Length: 471
Image (tube, rainbow, N blue to C red; front, side, top):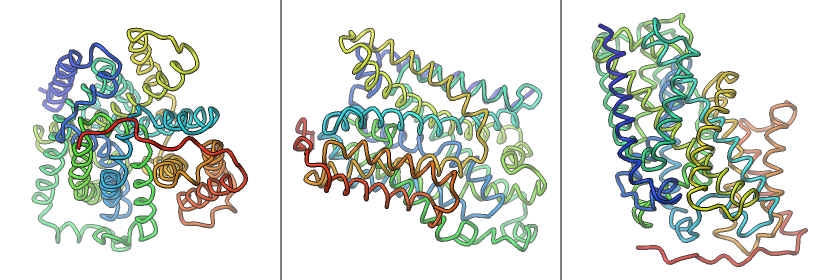
């Protein structure tokens, strides 16, 4: 009897049962499908942002990094938590006042058309890159879980089928309600696995003895380094201020206080869990010192009691499900709302629009497979891709807090600058004068925004709240 396979099969079945229940709530309008009718409660906002953040990069990716550098890899997830708290305290209320559905909708309202088009394209690409990493992590988990059934490639394909199916069925309601199960499972599974592994390994001191002496495995800072940790924090605060999938969760809340509370509580929940995943990566180094870092964590877990192994790997896979569904839905929303409805068929009916959004889930989900088959190095790839959100965060912060400095062309030239910096960073080593691209991105994007203010004399429309939000 293959107990891990039975456990994961039950988990998948529960996800689809929840999704079919959510389908009823998502029916009737596109707002119900993409924003849960703006009726999400604090617990649902909390599990949604935790589900999005604590995905493959925060579990498999952190463990992969910890296998090489130690516990300091856990700062990646802590940086996510800091970003969520900043989002809740700084801009959640402002976004609710705008009464928008997407970030490019904000660009289209206050800036020129080319800025909005550039915004749509870049946001979709960023999210597809991040989502592809969930496919990779999902494939490695299923392959480790049931190697006689799944190869790495078939594991990726199976993960994609589940991610796409759940999202297409119930939209944001499906993603939010499934995250109640996903978040509970991932926290319980990962914590139980760490406790069991430490006990079996004879305690922390015994584990320390078995590790290579030349790597600071139990130092909370030295492995990644202070500059690396600071870079993660800046990147993920930046991401939380302007990535569509995160903003879409906030906009689904029933009122301002619900959005704010959900993000702050979710951020606090994230602060410790990265170090728990990192501990599993460190333990994996003692058990499988010559394994591939990406497969070390699944291999370690499969060496546990079959029931615990099944629960823990299902929990890690749940992390991928929760992240991928939110990213896929927000990418489809960007296409249907900001490309199809604005440029292809402005007169689209509500029923057709809903069908286009669901179709976009399928097409973009399949497109992500192309990225998944060509990407390696989960966290490094993620950090580079997410750095492009600096352009969007600069635009959003100027728009919300200093509209007098905004010009009609500011969004376009800022996004163009952000994209150019990223390309140069990857292709011209001489421009790498900072420890991470995010510093150059912020410097260049803010500079481009202010230079446009000096050279362009056409202001944006005055910023006004679109409605008075509930307190």
